[in-house]
Image (tube, rainbow, N blue to C red):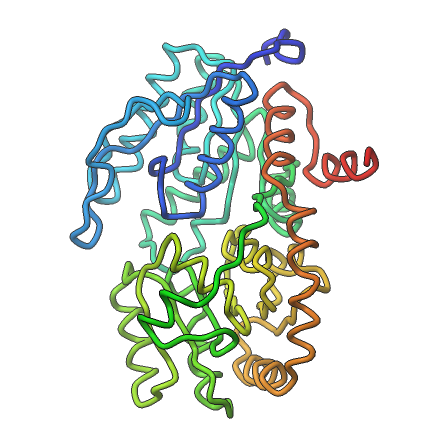
Length: 395
């Protein structure tokens, strides 16, 4: 570690691993954008290594090569389509970073972390942020899973600091790699709530008339459990599934499961005002995942004051505490029972709604997330909860 980082007023930071900023994709991209822009506002220099133009399901991303975004320097690196794309991108980004001699290189996600060894070989300080164990996701083949697991291993063993999003992930790193990780967190801002205008015009949705699922439509999200459970619920409310057809086989499976039930609506990818209206007017927000990091959609739904129903994986329960209903992951009868309970008890739903926004926005704050990250960049091994408690005690 550079000995002067603890006292250095302005850091020169590189971020490698995200797809692109700015972005509407959420997840890692949301975190990178929030961190980078806020760090620049605090006087630091930040370079974000965007991936080059690629094509996903016929839609081209990042065709415009930005040089700068809200004070963040953008370097665009080639990213060929196919499994080798991430390897080429992360190698070239790391090689570029080596010659720029940043104070710290911040790797995001498992795959790019394979290049940590190269960065360390040339004496760079490296911080790795693991947002989820990507090697466990259903969509990857054998080679991809192996490669992603290598990234996790190198992050745990060779980074100057390895960050994860939950205590369960922290324990996993300890058990598998015999290394200590630190818990970091995503953040959320308190939003302005919106009346049902666009969503009423498009899909006939009104306040409290639907249960909402919003996010990536992929097998680990457990939406097949939700569709199956909802079909047997007694209600006139609708189930709205918002998310793009990025996994066509799984999307088709869900639409096939929903056939014959007029209450289940697939609205596709949403953004902007439409997203805000969906969150603002949902009766219940459901997240039945098998696997998560720290879901931005969960933080966002609670920030809008939703009543949330989540699976009992640690990445969900550590976020919601006692401010949401919980069911055992993958247990369709239990999920159906919880859904029917909330449908039959609007007073319970309203009680959750009245408390969730203040709870989540006070605990998961982007400014605190950035403060923790900068302290780690400087060499202080500090947990997110420690930073949050310090702020609370100072009030």
